Amino acid sequence: MNILAIETTGASASVAVIDEKGQIFEEASSETLNHLQFLMPMVGKVLEKSKLQIGDLTAIAASEGPGSFTGIRIGVSSARALAQALQIPCISVPTLKTFLYNAESYQGVYCPIFNARRSQVYGGAYKWKGDSIWEVVEGNAYMLAELLEALESALREKAEEVTFFGDGVEAYKAQIEEWQNSSLNSNIQIKFADAGIRYQKASSAAKLAFELYKEGKTCPYDELKPNYMRKAEAERKLEEAKAAQSNR
Image 1 (spheres, rainbow, N blue to C red):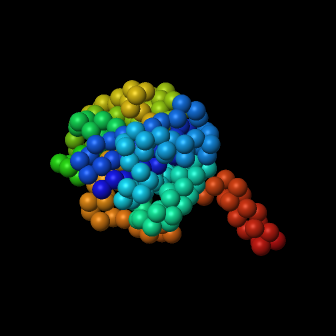
Image 2 (spheres, rainbow, N blue to C red):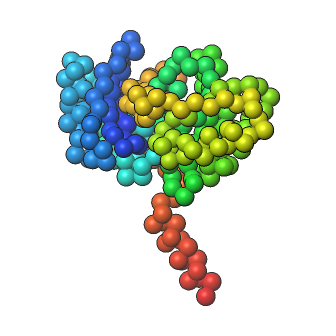
Image 3 (cartoon, one colour):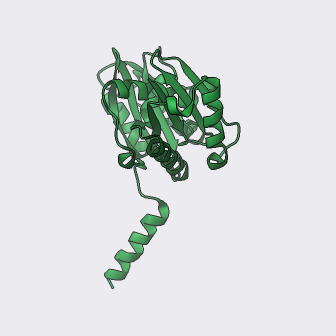
């Protein structure tokens, strides 16, 4: 069993191969927002690194989102094309949950947040419960204040350390610290993930894909879909324009 995992939801793309022993080979781009140019060459490099031929792959996993709309489309489309050509199944990997594999030994609450602009984030909160992932706060699109309120509500009964991951840290760190300082829920202690584990990684997507594969959670290539968690700005404006026109 050899799974190729594609991660293109963030600023930098990466790919990884995981085998049946859980051994991982990873290739990451140092370029940002240039996924289309570097993705397939990286696939070639990671196969070479793992001493595999493309025909040795058993499944293709794609980080489904949320994240960059363009990046998600590139990753999902590439995974679908490879799976179709190789006649192997796909694995849809929920991006927010991959962060639990960035620091697997951490026993606190993982709270990945992606900057969606205008004080909005894609985010959720998760915790290890044995070998399973417990969803503390559902992954979704939120106003930052809504996510923090949901987090406070979910953790009201127990003291917890919460570590924030993702590019939303840079955008909203000050607001999160202000929330911590003004919060009546003083049993929540916040941290921010170090840069080395803060962002999306194909190796983490591969680890989650491995677990999903063992559970039989694969799909045909044409059923692999992006998970944007909200409509694109252009789509939203078009719908608003159509609604305004119909109300005239």
